[in-house]
Image (tube, rainbow, N blue to C red; front, side):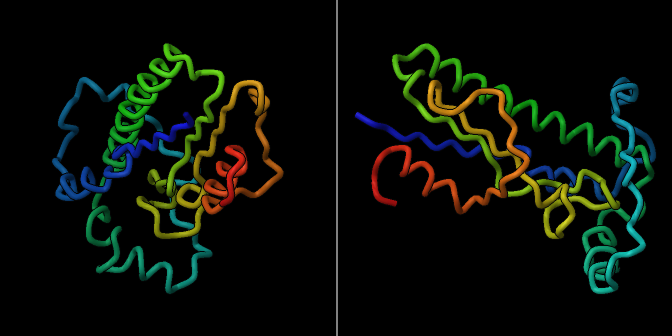
Length: 180
């Protein structure tokens, strides 16, 4: 019979709690042995001076997330945050690998649609921001990957069509041949 399995992975979504735990940053990197692994700051790390004043106040004012948690972070702390975020992503990668291995070991591998997506991105320090509540690409763009052997072309990147999370259910019901 047809089946549906939906998995929701907690990480890296809860990286925000890492920020809260590190809001009073230590004076030095807590794990000096990882210093060489810290990623560089991205080219758009600094604030965008064209931001509207309301956006600046919402994020950078004393009550905004940056003002409350990260205004005193040195550059190495932002790099440490990006490093930690990558470790959260690695946890998800490992679990997705386990699911895909189990699917490959089953008789359903050639007749199963696999979808990978997310509800939002993360600022990752771009524009000195984190989390999701603004319209920079880092927060607004999400991964969207679909696989269905023999039905969806493999290795194709479509950068032409706009896709919304609203499209997922309708697409899957269409593939299943049932009414949305």
